[in-house]
Length: 111
Length: 113
Image: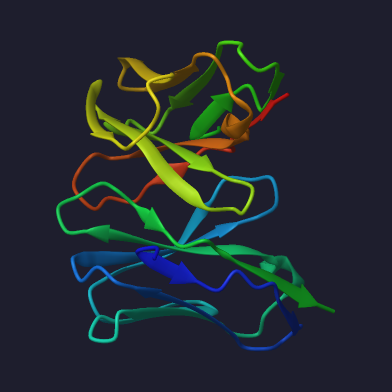
């Protein structure tokens, strides 16, 4: 069993929909939680970075972390075709540098 | 200006050959990484260097050898390439403190025939 589980999708939604992307993890030592977006044939780019439990909002994006359930989410409001990409969750232990990634969820936002 | 750059972008080679991938970052970061992304998009760390010193070495075959001539460069040399080495290799960098954000390069697509 992988340390970080993520549904690979693909997930297809209409433009304007609210998208919910999720990851579960098994290692309670993870303290830092990230979401990366990866367009086709490009490198991952950081979208959201949160520490411990709670919510963080940035424009149309909201990241949620529930450490008690070992569950993190990324919500995208008013989704746009330009949001079509693979979304990777990633986690890091406190004091460390090693990122552990989920397998990524492929999202397609259709007109 | 590209923050983390890699060369080459594409690499097609025969089994058994030796090849190198180069990475450079102009962010002034102290820590650099190599990741491998397989055909299912799973991204896994291979190595990390902090200020030219190896700090992370995951279970990677000895055929892979990273080299950091200075803290702005981290190269990856692969000996005796195998079919299973076909993947996208990403370089990344961070400022070096624990839990700092990592910035990724555009990737090098390696195909071993």
